[in-house]
Length: 324
Image (cartoon, rainbow, N blue to C red; front, top):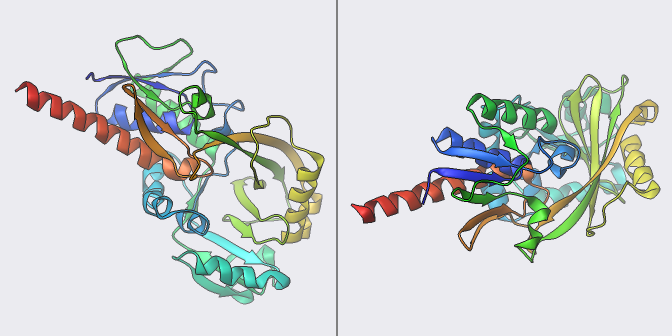
């Protein structure tokens, strides 16, 4: 067992693992053939919602339990907006609000007046909703950049060459690790970045839409990330016209003023997922694999990174005790 660790992958999982290990005094190197984070990785296209209670509506308890510590972890590393999450539905879909509430916790039931108080630009178009005050959000691209800068200040850079053979490997390559983890699959996600000078939201808003549930995440300066789709497909490639129309139509249903917004980017990614959609740390042939983050990358990566650091530390302490 060595204190020299090589982390494979410079996405959110790899950077979080490297951060935890470096903070605990390990000699860490990061290796990614693509170099620094960017549009080539799914972490670049994430929503950045730190929303354990909202995600629990359609996830297992580990997502809620481990996700709750993510706000504090990220708040020490980058800018996090602690504004909560607002879930709304149109009048014909208000039963979906009750269904959503029955599957989670940590919310306040809100009426149209309270919704307008929280987000004036929603007006009184939505009769019922849920407000999750304990949630937050971040800008994923800024978060990745801040982690890279923090690591570089500690002497940890990103290398495009393979690691030296004497280093212990922690594999955080996401879907690229299918060559070692055969049960990984890709889940396609699609998003849009738009800019609107006519809409001023301060927190993520989830619309329980009849055809395509939408989330809108403010990025500042009138920029919003629109996300919705989870497609069981490993196909790469640009967004389809149908997906773009549905995504933008759902945004228009949330606030018609989005009809005049500028489209800045369309993006797609493939999220790595295990069959149960739960991320985990797997040990195989002496390598630790951190993978299966699915749609919970920024929410779950800090907890997994801590698990890795504690596991390696525990193994080293056990070996030292045996040697004594």
